[in-house]
Structure formats: C-alpha cells, structure tokens
Amino acid sequence: MTVIIGGIVGLLTSFVVASDVYLNVLKPFDGMEIIGILLYYLGFALVFAFVSLAGFLAYLFIHRFGIGIFHSFWPYVQMMVLVLAVFDILYFSNKDILLSHRIMIVIVLIVASIIVAYIKMKQTNKTGFIPAMFFMVVVTTLELTLGLRTSSMDYIIIILVTLLATNSYQLISWHHVTKVDPEHAKRIAERRKARREKIEKAKRERLKKEQKQLKTKNDKK
Image (tube, rainbow, N blue to C red):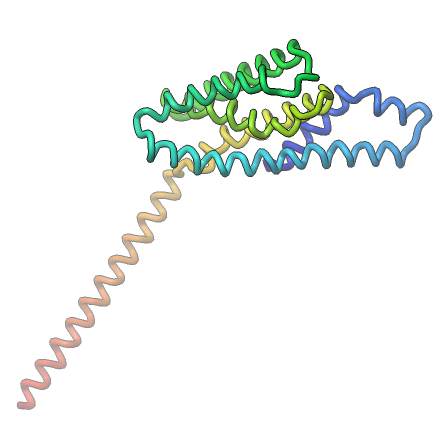
C-alpha cells in the first residue's frame, strides 16, 4: 500500500510541477510520448516509495536501538538530531538551490511533520510526539538527500511530496497494524485455554491408565 500511495501521489504531483512537459506532447498530441512520460514519472515516484519503505523499517530498528542505549535521554537525542537535520537542508544542500527554496522545503517538512506527529500523539499518547517528529523530519531528510543533489525544484517537489505521503501513511497506519484486536485476543485466549484443558485431560487419562495398569499388576501378584 505504501508503494501504491507513493506512485499515485508522485504521478499526480508531476501533473502540477511538470505541466509544461505534458503540454509539449499534448500539442500536438502524441500518445506514445504521453505514455512514456507517465511511466517515467510513475517509475520515479515508485523508486522513492521503496526508499520510504526501507527508511521506515530502518527507523523501527534505530528507535529500539536508541531506547536501549540512551534510555530516558533518547527523546533529547532525537530532538538534537532533528535540529541538525534541519540545518543540513538549509546549509549543506546543493548551493545551486536558492536559499528561499531551501527555507520553503524546511517549512513544508516541519508543518507536515507537526500535523502527522499530532495525529500520532492522539493515537497513542504524549510520548509519541517526539518519535513521530524525529521520523518525519530526520528520516525524510535522509531520504530526500538524493533529491537535494539536484538543483531542479520540479524533481525535489515530486520527491518531497511522495516521501511525505508515504512516510505519513506508514507512521499513522502502524498504530492500526500493531493494535491488538480485543475479539482476536479473546479468541486466542480461548484457544490457549482449550489447548491447556486438552493437555490436562490427556495427562489425567494417562495417569488413570497407569494407575489401572499398576493395580492390575498388583492384583496378579
């Protein structure tokens, strides 16, 4: 689903930021060229959808690893890395990208991250806000690094929008994926109980059989 969302969002974004490319093949109309451009931008978006998927899996490991090492200091470490990620976009990106464009990227990233982190906090609790912000800002920045090597804002916008959509979806849906279904948990508990009862019954029958065999043996003696 992450890959599907990324492909669709990236392709739709290309209609806006690369509208002149589409218009060039519409006037005059060239069906094969249109198909080629659609496949190109769809493939481009799918690449970063897969990057987003890999980034989320890596984040799950990093988050548990960070908790294990830093314990209660982990939230502060996340905030420090978050600030460094923002500075990385502003000061260490491709200098061919205008400063105003870099500032715009940071604003969009932070606003989107705050919205997603707030939703995540509502799903879980207050402690979920900082990890969500860390994932949305830091991981998205790392995934966006490939795009920031170019000075073309068209490609950067497609990558950024695709990553924000896929990362937001993964972070928000993760709560539902890992959420315990009460009915399912009840069924599991009932099956475990039935299994234990079956084992206990088998033990009692075996013990009764052994006692009967022992009694028969003693009677023969």
